[in-house]
Length: 385
Image (cartoon, rainbow, N blue to C red; front, side, top):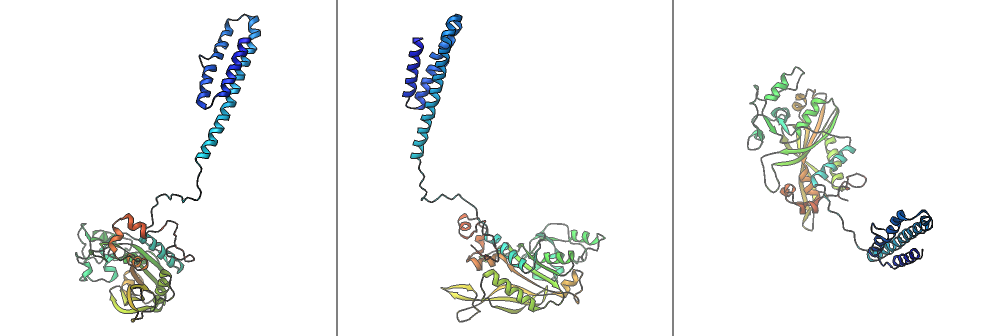
């Protein structure tokens, strides 16, 4: 019994003296490991007589419990001390700026598309879409563009190598349900749409008036320089109803441009022009002023301190276009307008080279891009936050 008491005292002293978790683990293995001293005593109980086991057994088991409890308590104390030391050494300075993770940005074209949708939704317009690979009839013929118009030339339009043109020179009428018109359309030459006007045709064919839509999307023309690219973005608007006049067109465009550029001093000038699909037609100029040598939209077109800048094409929908879509032009009238989304972005946000829009330069996107949280709203302003 004296041997057990001495071993207990020795082990408890060693446990209390352990300065760290590694030293404590060494003591535990020495006492309770497979070859440990307490373990050896437990194994020796099998060779004791019943009388000796009755005397030594409780002492040996008490030794094991005492050592196990002492090791657990010491381990908890050492772990708490280690945590306190770690917390003291890893103190966080809350005054330091937080490292922001890398994040992508919304492209200016996508942002402007969202702005346009928000503005025109408030005016009662829906957003319409259509295929980028179009038929000759939807892209040209239905829009009253004659066969000899330069826009139909190969050097201006991207034609696709598909089945040859059907008889009739591409004059495919809207489908009357018998499938013949659809077959003719399939045989027509296909092309990459040169404007989003085919969406207007498809909308008038598929829906009964009144119609109020905008048609944003990609368009394609064989052109490339600092202000033109083979692929660009365009938005067009269409209104078909009874009693529509040029006054409705002017008010719509003026309201749109005031909301888009976030200025109340927008002044418009409508100049007579020509488009095959509208009659009368007008180019829409917006007044600008010069501020620190830069043109700023707004200010009334004072020629002494600014001037006029063309931003839109517009007009009353030509009766032949309305008739081509199966509507009576004596009953239904409408107006249409169109402009380049890329150009609107350049004017509003200060870019001067359209080609940079499609270079994929991360530096440019970081500079001109928008946060994903900059959702355009009329109440908060449709521009950058």
